[in-house]
Amino acid sequence: MIEDKIEIIKQILLDINGNPILPLPGNISWVSTNPAIGTIAMTGLFTAIARGKTTIEATIQTNAGPFKAKRDVTVRP
Image 1 (cartoon, rainbow, N blue to C red):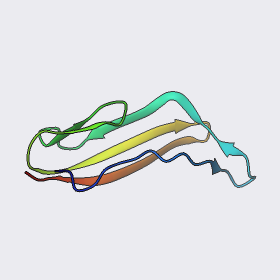
Image 2 (cartoon, rainbow, N blue to C red):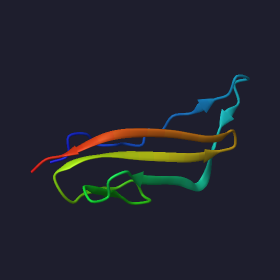
Image 3 (spheres, rainbow, N blue to C red):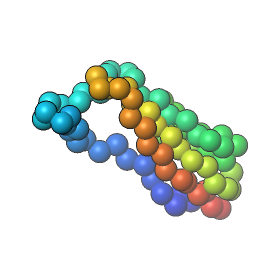
Image 4 (cartoon, rainbow, N blue to C red):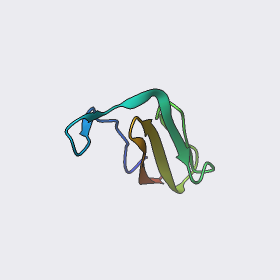
């Protein structure tokens, strides 16, 4: 059982001048800090492997530079 699920939400991020900050196609990367517990595909799909905790980190490259986010995930039997 996965305690938290990660969803990509469609939103528009604006810079200080009101211009959209756009993601660059194909420039999102995902990583699990503990792949023995769970892995994350480049599509954002999380696969639980064993009981424990891991952190999922996403980095997206945009025309304004990289943005990062992370989420702790607990896998339980």
